[in-house]
Image 1 (tube, helix red, strand yellow):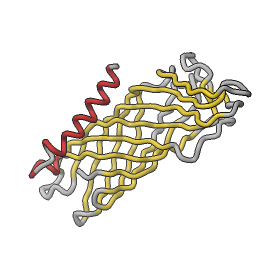
Image 2 (cartoon, helix red, strand yellow):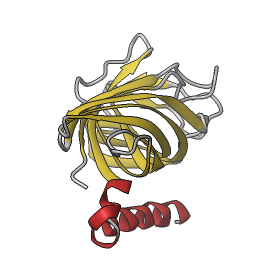
Image 3 (cartoon, helix red, strand yellow):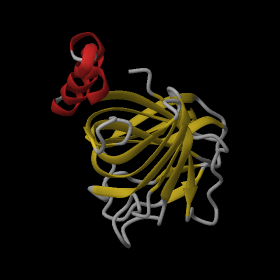
Image 4 (tube, helix red, strand yellow):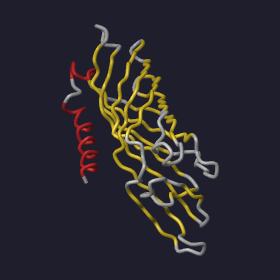
Length: 220
C-alpha cells in the first residue's frame, strides 16, 4: 500500500509542476519527461523465447543547474518511476523460492510476463545547440519498488483458461544502475539506457538484464 501511495504521489507532483512552477523564468529550471521504450533482454536462459517488443515506460522530473550563463547547458538531477516488462514463453516456478527458475510453458497461453517497477534517481549533463538540438549524457540509480508476474492461458493441456497474478518476486537485486543517452530535437529525443546489473541476485536467478531503447517526450 505504501509503494502504491508513493507512485500516486509522484505522479501527482509531476502533474502539478507545469501549472505551479514551470512559468516565467523558472521554466528552464525544471524538466518533466516521459520515456517510452522497449526492453532488449540480455543473457536469457537457452530455452526462453522473448517477445520482440517488451514495452516499458518511465516518468521523471528533474531540477536543472545551469553550467553556463546562457543556460543552454545544464546538470540535472531528479527522481522518476520506471517500468520494465519481460514477455516470454516461460513462467517462474515459484516466485517465493530462494532461487528463481523460469520454465517454458507447455499449455496454450496468450500472455506471460514479468513486470518490474523501480524508483530512479537520474543525473544528466544536458547540452543544447541552436536552441533546438540537444544531447543528454547521464547515469541513474534505481531501487526496486514492486514486482509481479502475470499469466493468461490454460492451466492444463485441456483448459480452463485463467488469469493469474502474483506479486513480490523473490531474489531480485535491490539496486540497479547504468548510463543513459538522449539525442533530440526540441521536445522529442531518442533514448537509450544500458543496465549492466542483473535483475536477480547473483546465483539466485537467470543473468537477465535489459537494454532499453525508445523515445523521450519532454514538453515541459
